[in-house]
Image 1 (cartoon, rainbow, N blue to C red):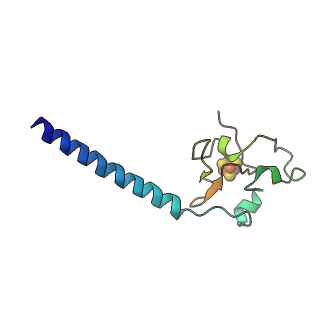
Image 2 (tube, rainbow, N blue to C red):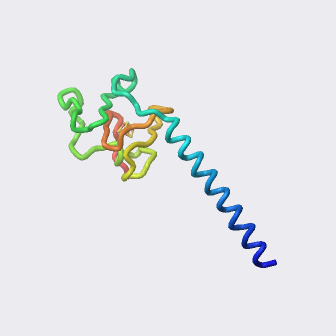
Image 3 (cartoon, rainbow, N blue to C red):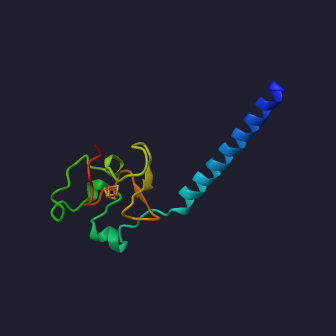
Length: 105
Ligand code: SF4
């Protein structure tokens, strides 16, 4: 009885884990990287490499400001790319930057 219940729980958890891993992988693959040429990206001065930001055009940019430490970044600081609500359906580079940058509290 005890073994059966444990077996059931293990199987259920494994199944759920596999499903959520699959759907997470699916989401990651479904979201393409944001292109700098994208109209909204260009309007916000988005660069996939923050060191390439046009500092004359965006004087508020300061070295060390990166998507991965922006309050809007939807991934972990260690993620190479993640979503950003400003660019729905796209992923921004962790080392990127745009003029809507807001330091994570
Ligand atoms: Fe990166 Fe933040 Fe701009 Fe989104 S709002 S693109 S996370 S700097």
